[in-house]
Length: 87
Image (cartoon, rainbow, N blue to C red; front, side, top):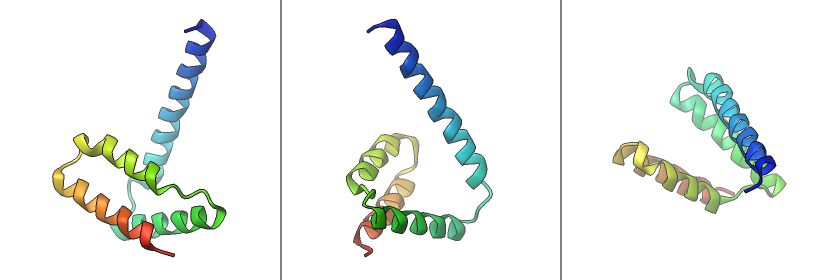
């Protein structure tokens, strides 16, 4: 790996961490209902624009699987399945 590639990769990772922290601060005080409403609006927007990628969401869920309880994982899986079925 070239040094410039390493630097670019680290910049992307730092931006991702910053984006994650910003998003967390934005959402941390919302109720479950408020979070679900925002999620549904975002999914509707993505479906309308052709950006919705159910497979990528399921892949992401598998990544976090080891960091959440079994119940949380199953609940997220159920939510994602429902989102995929919505028109």
